[in-house]
Amino acid sequence: MSGCNKVTEAGRRFFLGRSAIAAAGAAAVATAPAAPAKAAPALAQVTYPRARLANLRDLKLNEPVNIAYPDADSPGVLIKLGARVEGGIGPDGDVVAYSTLCPHKGYPMFYRTDDRTLNCPGHYSRFDCEKGGLQVWGHATQNLAQFRLSIDGDGDIQAEGVDELIYGRHSNVL
Ligand code: FES
Image (tube, rainbow, N blue to C red; front, side, top):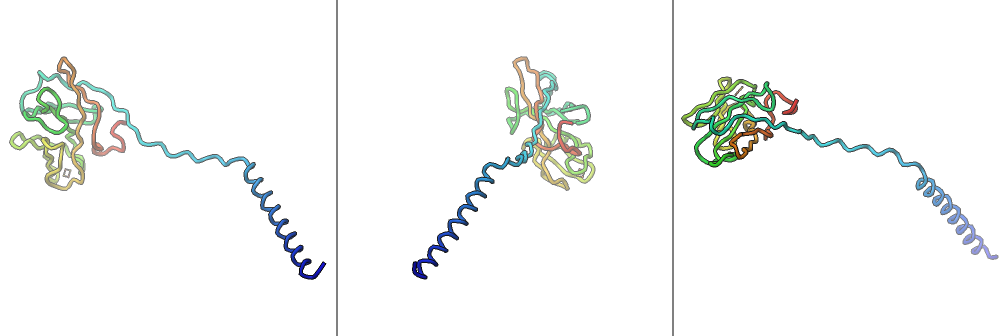
């Protein structure tokens, strides 16, 4: 065997040796027990209660009715606005409900019949009840929590959800 052939043979053995080690390592990895997979964090899901708030017959045009939803510690108002609005229910699409806790620091708000807004005496934030609780003025940094409503054939109005976080809560349903 020439010197050149000896070098070639040594290189071939070296290569085959390394290949065998690599194959053995791969097989060991393939047969090793899988590490337990980390569970993905669960999505936040809130199941809202259904709660009867009033009957359509109880409502007078532009006169708020005090309610509480989704529990007794979350005050709000139910209002028949007189014109179809976003999120409105009933035959005229004009019945809405909102939290009356200001999203800024939780002051209880009052309703103004002249411009159909909820108003905060704390730092003067104002929210438009005809526009889904849109903030129109003030310190708050989010729109007002609107309660999702439905109505049945007898005119009973039910609350069944909330579209924003109610002030002071990590979850609307405690
Ligand atoms: Fe309502 Fe500050 S608490 S604006």
